[in-house]
Amino acid sequence: MSCNQTSNILSSRTMDEKRINVYYTTRTVGTALAHPSRGKTQLFRRNCLEEDLEEILQNPRVHTDKRYIKRPMDFGVQDHFCYWNDVVKVKNSGSDDKDDEFIDEEEDHRSRLIEYEKEEEKLIGKKMLSLRALKAIGEERAHETKIMTDKINARALEFEQKNREEAEAEEEATRRKREAEFRPRCTCSVC
Image 1 (tube, rainbow, N blue to C red):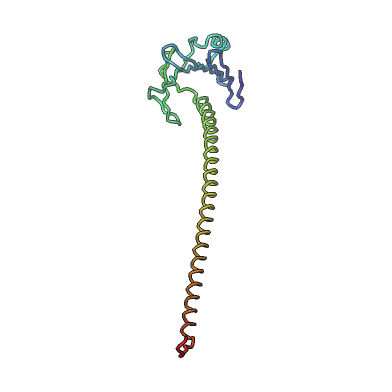
Image 2 (cartoon, rainbow, N blue to C red):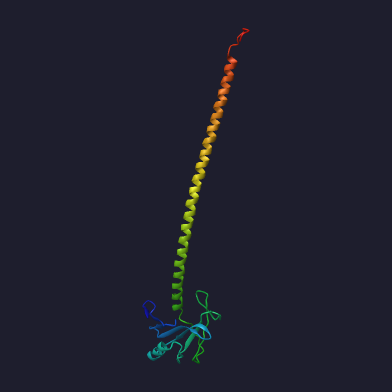
């Protein structure tokens, strides 16, 4: 059994996964269990006495003379929309009073928050894995970029060297040609 003083609730789970919540400030007892024909349901009994609580703790499916509310877990009937756009079916049973009461949505919203926090933790874990993968990909690309940059720089140096050598060879050829043009020609018949 656990106690949440923030929401003023005592909560207990049986061995066969039936949940019993006691809202001790409003004297409301809620049970969540798998109904043999209706599936997962929640029943809320308002203004319970100690005898009622004792009876419910012994048998969570017991029907007291107190008014209670059922809510199927499949949200199949559209009677009421709560903040999360989930549909809650409301039934009035065990009473001739025609006023419908909606279930205390606080527990439902608190349960959802816990589920959302668990989902958030899973998503954060997945996000961290993706970030690590992206970091590894980024590092691999940076390494490949460096290799390519080094190759491009090496080819550029080779190209500059080749152009320099060709320019030097051209200059040498031009210089020899000029020297040959400016050499005095001998008029003798031997040369």
